[in-house]
Length: 169
Ligand code: SF4
Image: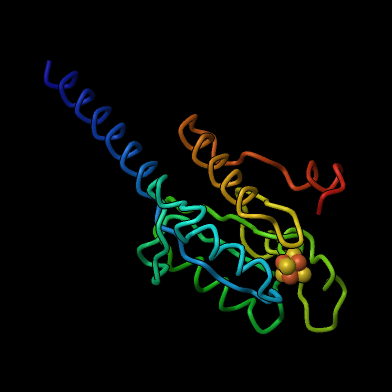
């Protein structure tokens, strides 16, 4: 009887935690070498015109309090260690959204002497949002994809190869 009660409580607490997480995602933004085009679109997404806060998503200054890491730009050799450190400081469970063609594949900076590669070559990525730069609607769509998949218990919505095959990165 006690075991059943305990199992029930664990189930309820898990559900409440998942519900709370899905409705109050805190995001930290990291520019790993972007030209700032993608960053401006992220700002537009967060501000009242596109208002991503209506989904409970808010920008957080510290990676230690963030659930998702939004990365823009290719990863330059200078930014690589900082990106890794930022990711490691985030508590589990954590998710990464790669915004812009440069972060997906290196984009126009691919092969530059100072660029190490794409974001998923450094940290695991959950959602890829291609575009140069992607519009706020695309960024919102990517975040909603992540939330939907988290709800279904599958945190890896799209594979990078699928995006590159479609010729959008
Ligand atoms: S994807 Fe385009 S806008 Fe974004 S960082 Fe690369 S060049 Fe700039």
